[in-house]
Amino acid sequence: MNKNNKIYLGILVILVIVFAITKLNDNVEERIDFFGVDSADVREIEISNITDTLRLKKQNDIWKIVKPIQYDVAQKQLENFFKTVIGVETSKMPIAESEESLANYKLTVSLATKITFFGKKDKILSSALVGESSDRNNTPARKDDDNKVYRLEENISYLVSSKLERWRDKMIAQIKQTNIKTITVLHPKNNYEISFRDSTWQYKDENGKFPVSSQNASLKKLFSNLNNIRTTKFIDNEYTNYKDKLEKPELVLNIVLYDGSALNLKLIKTEEKKYILQKNNQKNTLFSIYESWAKGFIKQAEDFK
Image (cartoon, rainbow, N blue to C red; front, side, top):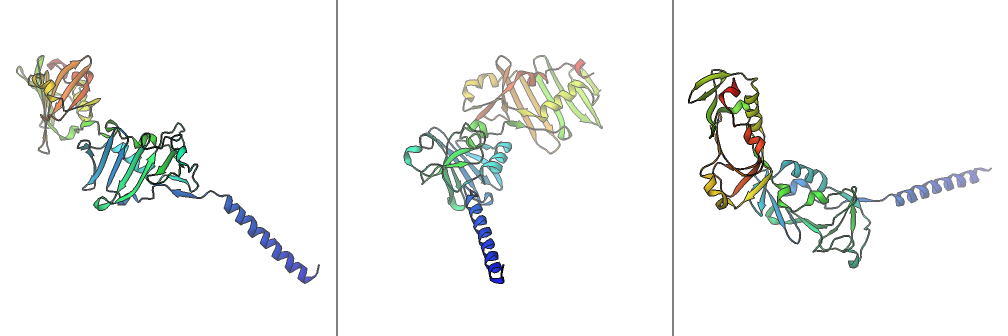
């Protein structure tokens, strides 16, 4: 083989390699960030469907529910939303484009859930419709002003729910033992006080007082209950239905803390194995709580000996 033929052969090999790489790249599916927003720019989020509208707003670097009511956000739900929903990827190629296909993917206005991200001064950063998915690995979605349907590479249906219950923080209060100064319990069976004095927990009622071991089971139950006061159900705007009973509660807890704050909890029995709890005389929202939690405070002096 002469020198020229070798040069031509080398050029041919290079062209074949370039062609192969080009074809390989053509077959690689290009992925895009579907919503196309930077989480740092998001100031408000609205999630809505034909029946519900939920709006979250960042206030002083803390996210709050602002619609349909003002309430604290469940942090785990919020973290999962930011981790999974914002930044979710999809192929650049849609899986459908016709208006007729929208109903099949539940992406019509009446069937889908709409998500809108707002930046400063209510500027819309991105808006899209998300359909329901039976596949654990993807979700159909489209931009608000476009019929192109994309398959998101995560199932985000459960994270974009507009239901208020899913987003509300179910923690009523969380009190650490080290911050407790005094616990006063008022109940028809017994009124007593637990306080921390001279490095020791003490029990006191109308018959006297005595020190309580930090390992006492009843004392530890009190601390455990106060460290995790969670509701099983929110009861909004129904105070008048329970007003009379709450004026004569079955159980009252007054907790004074070393940080200078105090917590007042009133409980009434309303159904089997459930109590309704009122926090600090608030009327807009009451809470349902298990009877087993309340029973942790209904104790006698002997329980602390």
